[in-house]
Amino acid sequence: MSRVHPYRLEPARIADAALLAAMTRELIEHGLKPAWGAARIGWHVRHPESIVLTARLGLTVAGFAIMRYGDDTAHLNLLAVAPAHRRRGVARRLLQWLEASALTAGCFRIGLELRAGNEAARAFYRALGYCELGEIGGYYQGVETAIRMGCDVRVAQRYDSSLNSNS
Ligand SMILES: CC(C)(COP(=O)(O)OP(=O)(O)OC[C@H]1O[C@@H](n2cnc3c(N)ncnc32)[C@H](O)[C@@H]1OP(=O)(O)O)[C@@H](O)C(=O)NCCC(=O)NCCS
Image (cartoon, rainbow, N blue to C red; front, side, top):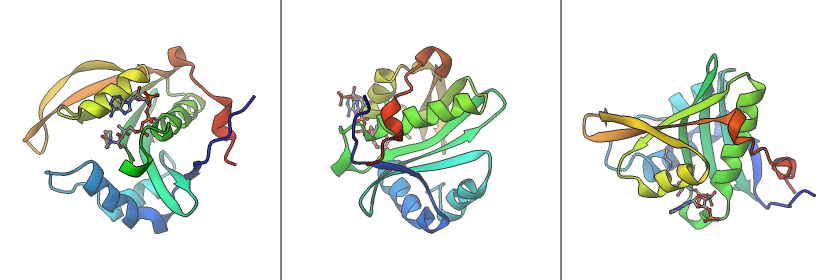
């Protein structure tokens, strides 16, 4: 039976790009020079091999993710949920939708990098079955190490039928 979830998952529109860039600056890039402006995000909205997915509650964008599909690996570029909407399963739902779409696109792995000091995100990805694969020193503008993480989405098999329940 499908569980009703109040957050709707919807592909972003070009008109969302400025808001998503502001959320990226505030929630992900703090202390770094902004690298994900509205133009770059808009490029991903338009590009057929990228997905910019939002989670909305009414008119509010509660969270979003950007992923790019490759030959057999998809790369998760950004994922963030606004503080007021955390620990309600929003990021889990975004990631599960992306995993299902990666499989459909023929990508068997999802890879990502995150800031080494971001303990909450490391715990989140571990909880979702992602493994830590190594470190890349100075990855973030020469000032912060990245942790590489990845997941075989065929093994994970976490596709949840409630993902299609937007009501
Ligand atoms: C990391 C982040 C995306 C998690 O979003 P979220 O919607 O709160 O996550 P969920 O509610 O789906 O959490 C799923 C599970 O992940 C784990 N988890 C999530 N946040 C956690 C935290 N702060 N500490 C420990 N475990 C955490 C838990 O196991 C959680 O399940 P539970 O709530 O039933 O215990 C969010 O904290 C965030 O946006 N942080 C800032 C941006 C960021 O770091 N993005 C990722 C790197 S680009």
